[in-house]
Length: 508
Ligand SMILES: [Zn+2]
Image 1 (cartoon, protein in one colour):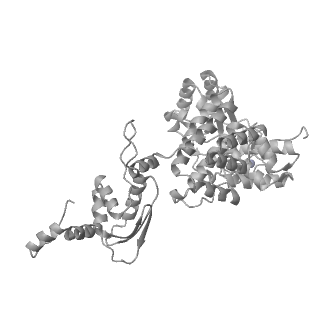
Image 2 (tube, rainbow, N blue to C red; image 1 turned 30 degrees about the horizontal axis):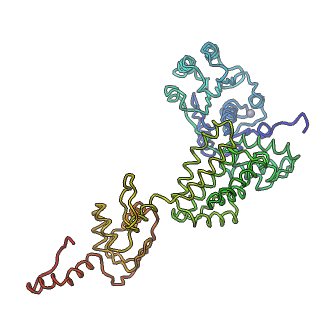
């Protein structure tokens, strides 16, 4: 690499609103305001690092002072004296202040004292204060004083990564713009364009990895791309990026999760050793395993969320995830997630990451093998002869195996509305645990949803509720009960005594 190399983030810094990456809403609002002559005295841009706050501030400064038109313009020319000076950070009327290094109130006062003087070359005197949340309280007070009565020729452009630390009194005097995390697809497109422009080979898989690692920040993504170019001499492929990021690829992560969930401790630990020896960063590996768990959860059949097409896995990996999912419950995934989240801090605090990680694997395997609470309870209720545990009794849960079971469970749960609707309107033609085929005589469109939620909470698993369009003339639970009672010999006797008797209700 030659010594004149300009880092990509600087070389491709957006110079006008049109080339600002991924901030469509901001661009639209801001350009409309400028075009209609509504210039505020103070703006505040907030967002994570590298989303374009400083770039936007400079573009706005150019828009206000560009000489190509008689007034502020949403399309600064970029070539006039003012535009060029601002782009280079050398315009006499545009002050760029890094609050992180000007925290003293004296500095701030000195700077603000000059506010009253008219601009020299531009229309506006512009103060860009970066990381404004770093100002001291007294510096904020000095700034507030100016913001309360700003001279007509002054515009403040504040930028911050931590808006919560900016006093409300300041915020209330600013027009606020939130710069969003740039979406992966937008970043990919941007990087691909740059690669083409720079005559760099950038494979799609490598681009995807870089865009995801950038986590919404154009600047972070571009400095990763810089690194990758430097390390590969311009042939950026997936393997190179994985090595650079010290990451195992998603296939390896999927394989590891499969081994962990299969319960083979020795194989799982061996696999971790292998990945570790290949140079993977274990905190990154944990992050990848969390990402895997998140997507596996979203793809789990019990969630009925469909097969998330945005999941960053290949077709093969997805098939593998689906196979794994068919053998584990949502509950297991959720507990695995919890243990992983807890391990993040543990890993950071530990002086020996490898030890920490091995222990995490063992814990995860333990979870994968443990039955869920619902499973334990179901076992207890089905095997009545099993001795009760001496510890505190588990909350009583009912296994629901028939239409009448369901009625009893609804009643004992005091789900009175659901119970009465179900027993009087629903003709159950098929009932197996996990699936009900029925016809609904009533008109409560919410019934299916309500029952489905209740069943899931009650039994710990999702039920399929199949509503027939036409009645199969099955009895409702109330009708069944009535018939049972009527066929009871004692009741039959009693009925025969009263010719017109009818059973109206029973407590049976
Ligand atoms: Zn210009």
